[in-house]
Image (cartoon, rainbow, N blue to C red):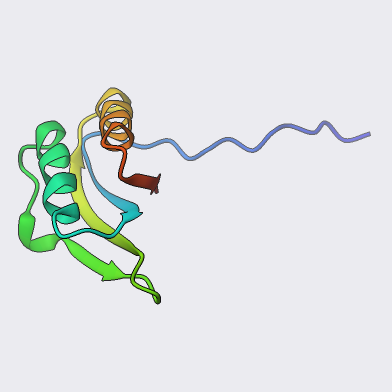
Length: 92
């Protein structure tokens, strides 16, 4: 019988360019709120690289940004602070 092992997630080498997609309830200041949280954790974030898309029915917005990730602790703290806004449904 073959030995079955769980596939391992690919290792990320830090620092690296790391795309983050944030999906939340649409609102006039959604992008500003999300960008402020991202800047707190990744001060060098390039605001010109932010990509914002409306959902088909306009209820949600997705915001994609690329940051320079420095380690898993930074990414965990960023995810926690994004969810703490109360406006974020998903972080990918």
